[in-house]
Amino acid sequence: MSEVRKGLFNDWVPKPVGLLVILVLTITALTTNGLYTANINDMVSGLGSMSEYMMMANYASVIGMMVVFPFLLKIKAYLKGRTILLLSLSGMLLLSVVCALTTSPAVLIISNLMIGSLKIIAMMEVIIPIMMIISPDGNRGRFYATFYPISIILGQLGAYFSAELSFAYGWEYAYYFMMPGLLVSLLLVVICYHNDRTMPYAPLKGLDLISFFLVTTSLMLLNYVLVFARVEDYFSSVYIQGAAIGFVITMLLFIRRQLTAEQPYLDLRMLKIRNVWASNVMVFLTGLFLSAGAIQSALTSGILKYSAQVNAELNLWMIPGVIVGGLLLFFWNKYEHNHKGLILIGFGAFVLGFLLLYTKVNPGAGMHDFYMASALRGFGMVVLFAGLGVYNAVGLQMMDMLSSAAILVVVRSFLGPAFFAALISYGMYQGQVENLQQLAQHMDVTNAAVTARAATSGGTLGLYGAAMPQAVLVTAQEMLGYVAMAGLWIMLVVVLFRFGRMNRRRLVNWRKKWRSIVGVPAVTG
Image (cartoon, rainbow, N blue to C red; front, side, top):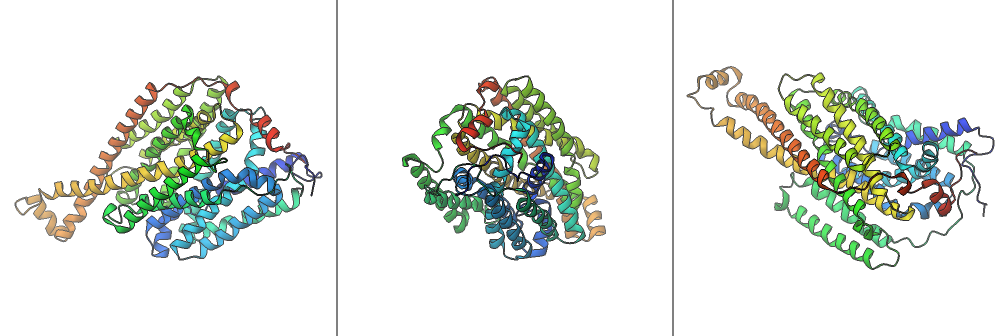
């Protein structure tokens, strides 16, 4: 058995090269996905499938990340860091090939579930060194102020380039483009990483696989219900009914097992802690604003006829907002201001962004009309993600943080967005039907303008083609108004909620805690 060794790299690797290797691995891990959302429309057309399968695959990757969180420390104690990276990156490479070649939605969904799991395992090996570099004193606020902006910016740039590749060559090339990056990362790991342990060996035992399968099954059933509810006509469908019942049963069994086990897979008792449950509730509500981007897409794609790459280019305007938000986070953390003010600013940015969109809903809108709204959305996203992440971790020990982080990830990236996406989808559909009926009430042969329009535009179908965009515009404006009003109510709740003051002395000192528990050494070789 090899001895525990300080550092991650071979002795001959200079410090600047080691930092470059960590940077390359981080970018590769962050940008490699099982599904690139900017290409969903192209994938639907190319595969002859439904967009709901693509969204289910997208959420499956988040579920895959969540379900392996409780195993991360056990995996790290059992395998060497070099082996973890080689296995996870190789698995992501092989599954990317599968995603590029498959025509089966089921295979795509399962592959995304597995890619999500492998991605978080690889991220474990690069985030800790990055954290030590950015925040050597263990200040989570400073780390989040840097890491979250970088990860969001990389996500937006990745979406833009994948849309461009899809337009120029085909949606499969988004996967092919990432494969050289994965190969280079594997080569760097083989050459630069030493093959010794960075923490003491511990056998891979105590894995609660029953809880693992229960929570995975439960969340995937909920994934199906939330994504396919409207398509299947909600609970009129026997499939939705069965999936909903299966979700309730498996989730209750999972909860019961966690509350009765001596060493639970996921410690649910921490949900009694004020900052943990409050941050999860607010992260869940943030999903309303993340999902409401579909309203803008209905306007840009359905009415203005923007292509996928133009929409991706439009989303790049989130980056200035993300940068400004990162600067705010840095100085807010530096001067130790309270959590409430920061979270209010984040929600306020979202509300202001959707109020601006509300005023821009018209068939003559141009790209410039969406720039400021996109920047405000990027600002609100990074401020809330980082601010609520720091608030969630206040007072928690290292082991508690793993359970808390697993819950926060699935709430932030799956439960909130999927729930509100289903709600907004229902609102957009019902609103279009109702508004179309309202417009049709005034269309008869006694109306000279309607008669003339029917004569020049192809009769009834021509009238429908003219009325439907109007119904979409009216519905989009109504939904944006509802989102903005809901945001104001959320801000009122935040104002009334009692937060503690942000005090860095109460935050966990990551460097000391991590080294005392798992013995992670410095970054350099």
